[in-house]
Image 1 (cartoon, rainbow, N blue to C red):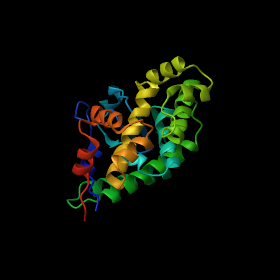
Image 2 (image 1 turned 120 degrees about the vertical axis):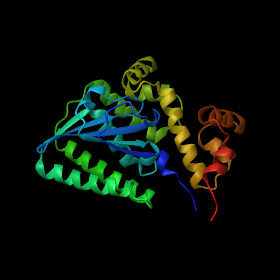
Image 3 (image 1 turned 30 degrees about the horizontal axis):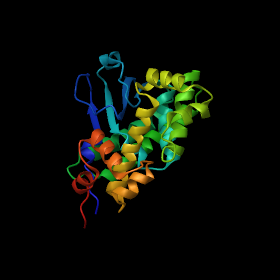
Length: 257
């Protein structure tokens, strides 16, 4: 049986006032602000960005933080829809009374499960997915203007999800988008605070962790699957980004039934 410490992947804070410890940059956040009974303001924190601190002046709200792993563990289409949701606009105003009640109901069940002593990782992940899918539907029903650079960020993320195993070079993605590698990095640095290479490597690490924990893949097989020419170069890369070797990570995070 594989064990997952969901406490390090998912967090709920009610009446958040800012300044409290949150997850690392490779996490995403939603702050749902209760403005009044007819309106919710939904604020998004994409990967490697921070919330605008002013949103926490109204202390009536709930903060959800979750690691990217919770999204990447599902199918690619879902992951891309979530990435698009978080990169469309930093804030979405919901005023549809029926949708507000739907969201409040999902949040109630999510909070209830989170605070149970015997809370289930699968249940939390499923409820989070229901919440995100509901938000995706809400925002797809409204026209949200995107600037060209935000569209390019999403296009890059979409391409990367499809090709990162075979194409770790940022030039490939720049050419696909019809812009220079330098311009691609300028856009990504402005929007995500990372270069294309850093984002690709971040995705490689996420995939490597998933494979080490959930499959019987060897370090050699994993190295070549991720495009490395040798086990040693992959091991150095993995240790640099996680602090441990692939074998140490696998041993620590899995246990046989």
